[in-house]
Image (cartoon, rainbow, N blue to C red):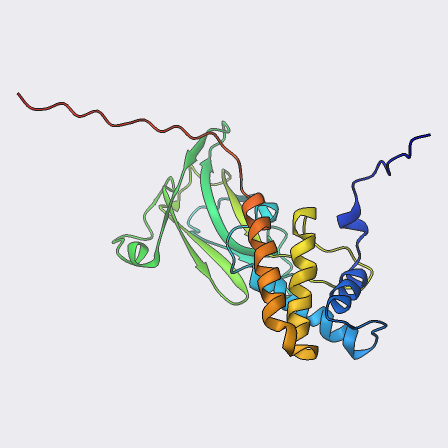
Length: 242
């Protein structure tokens, strides 16, 4: 009689933080860890997740939300964490950056907005001029992210929406029994990455070796995490002058 398969594909969610830590320690030759060894591993894992934010866009951490426009209000605020003390019912938490925006009118018709940098926004001569927004400027502070619209919404835009996609922060590790806030594709590099971080503290003779393994697995995960789309290349035709 043939053996049966498990019938499940939930390993990434049943693989708890304490198991990730155990796997990482085993890779540097340590077993039966406890106490401060667990705490320092959890801290290193949180630091590694912050470092992943510098590695580019992670598609599983892209969110979508809308902002209700207010007449005369050009600036709107999102927050980097949930510990900022705000009680705003319209606040969005865990935002790292804004990717793209559209202005959505009362008929649910979208008009794309252009993202501009600080210098371009500073060069606008009449920043309080009211009308339909066509551009937006993003500022990334330590505790918050703000979006400033141009034009400033007027009376006819009040109550309409700005719909946007944003980059979410990877959630903190939290309790040892939690699952990690990463998809299954990143489980291998998460374990190898943590073992690399821990080797710097407990097995420095293996740090370079484990770094190479970690970077290799992380690169494969980042490539796989891309968004597949169709691409069409059309050669440009040149006509010689007569």
